[in-house]
Length: 343
Image (cartoon, rainbow, N blue to C red; front, side, top):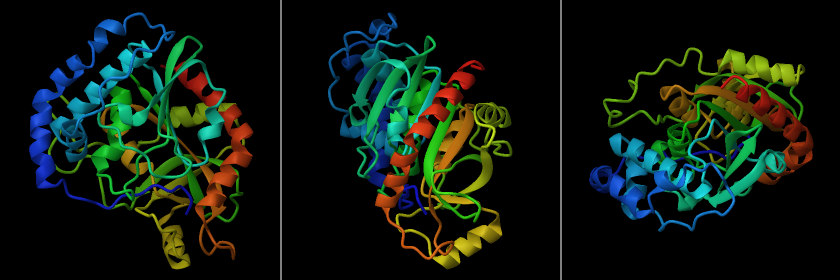
């Protein structure tokens, strides 16, 4: 499988739970210590970037990891800090860039403001090649777009709440549409390496959920979220307007980080999967829980195990993304433009 996206399913540790309780109380004070973000964000101008805030505290990182009410509070704190640092009080759309997708957004939008992701409360430091760990704010047709260059994975040892945190932060920042991209292994034999495929549905086989554990706060939607139409049909139709040849498929999200065996791919094919990877499904659940419209695009970076007689490695994933970058850049630009018209 291709996208290097995974985590051990770790129950929130008791020590984190204690820290999270304290963080839920102290987050507002932490945001104030960062310099009154809301007061400085009203100009909407991204000229002189304000100075970095103090590094996120261990208390804040514990809150993001443990889930429950503290996780949503730390997402709001991160959104406030994002507004302060970018001088943009809200964003309209977010794109999460998976393995092989980073170069596709090099020219997307105007007036970019780049922030190291781990300078924002609750964000994890990435450890995976091809994930730069940068949060970029740009303007597209006068609208603010958030580009998340890289993601956290379950297989890096992060909890589902940490994996979901960037998407929750984006939605707290005003985002109503989330585009999730990834690199994937092609299970269907007619998929070609370098081909983008729309995600029509998914199989969450990670054994994890960002909604498990402590319930969301009372003012948040119920954790029993309906996923029957998780991947927005209208957004998929807009993507096909931009590129009529786009295929659709079912994405299977696994824990990783090891690639699958041929027997596992045969099982996934029997279950109805067309694509396989190690990310995306946790973020998708979190986005739909908070009511965001969701579009997914997988880049086929290799044939899944057993489809071809060839070994698999992550360098192949990155090379396929680099080769496909010009076409992906055109596709993403067209999709973002159309999606913004609906926001």
